[in-house]
Image 1 (cartoon, rainbow, N blue to C red):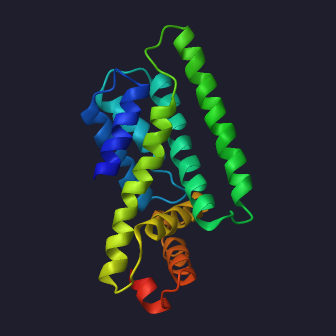
Image 2 (cartoon, rainbow, N blue to C red):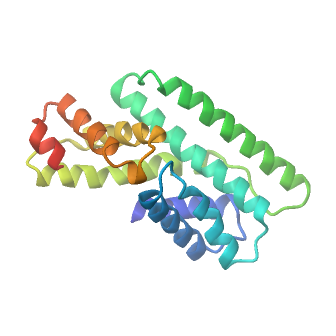
Length: 201
């Protein structure tokens, strides 16, 4: 819950006119969509939710959402690289694509700002929020591993979370079902857990 509080704050930081409650709600609508729809199509619902419930114009809402989602995924790739010491073969390609998407979104925000839109450019605080949210989400993995009888340190929980979410950047199934479990299990087994408890976690 705290991770999503941080993400909601980050969006309001970039889009000051966005009410915090609507930021929080839209993130959860998108999360639900990502667990029901394939190809991470729930991300479109993040923008749709705000546009339906506020009078904010579409361009700043969309540009800020793309910038922040890019920051989220770049943060998780960075954490995965730090934790594992390397990225999978598709990792650099994903990183380049995300950097391009983030750059395009920031250029879009710059143009909107020049036209008088009430937007801020993502700074160090937003980058820290993106990474911090994933560090907070690692608490779920840490608790699940403990419940499955796996002695997992918190840094290792961060590593498993980051590697698992990084694998979901190419997920095609609703909620990444199958791929998510495979990636998390492989990461836990790589840290010395038995396969059965790893899958249970």
